[in-house]
Length: 268
Image (cartoon, rainbow, N blue to C red; front, side, top):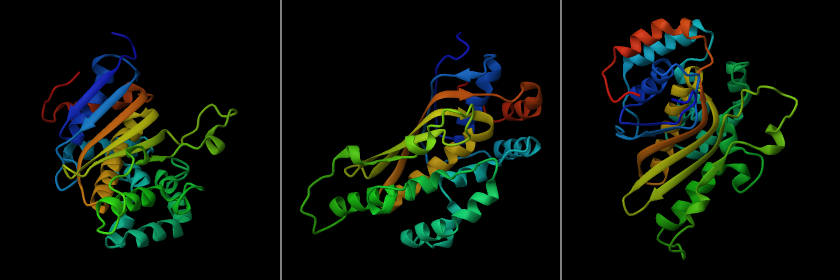
């Protein structure tokens, strides 16, 4: 097997999907996977099924390594806490987040100097003052959830949002930048079936430090978008160009032992 052979994971439980990717590095004695594709379904009221023991074990390991816990990573993609405070008021949610962005960034520096959600709702240019999510939701609802629309459909290619910005992110003098690994997100609404699919594209991804939190944040984002568009979140697809395991494996033996004890599934 190539040291960075491709891997496809399909599951109905987020914890088991992440576990299978994590253990793949140990079972195959590799440090990279290229590409990695994760497909997650089986949501419960729009949110992924999870295993509490896996989350606890991973969070304990991340704390010991001085990394952000799973939920804190997920919050950088979709800030559930602000959504709950806004009581399902979308505009209040967006405004409150931007009003508090300096405090949000300060809470996670230097581990995460920027916020993915900020790029999604305040990119710096484009319709709706750079709020890409609002543009997608508004355009969809204006056609498919409106009785006065003169249009019968919206071009499917418009349901996408960018995080990577060449002007800000192409920095040739930097060997490593912690942001942004996630470059692009697309949404696939299906009015006939009443469902929404989210696709995410990562150039690189640290499976231990960021992977689980990334997938959780994407699922929460998909659930939010689906609910605002009058749809049901059906699937999260995540494509990773290079998935990496950079932490010395001897430091992870306790975590490996704990996640191996979870309910078995098809593992690579």
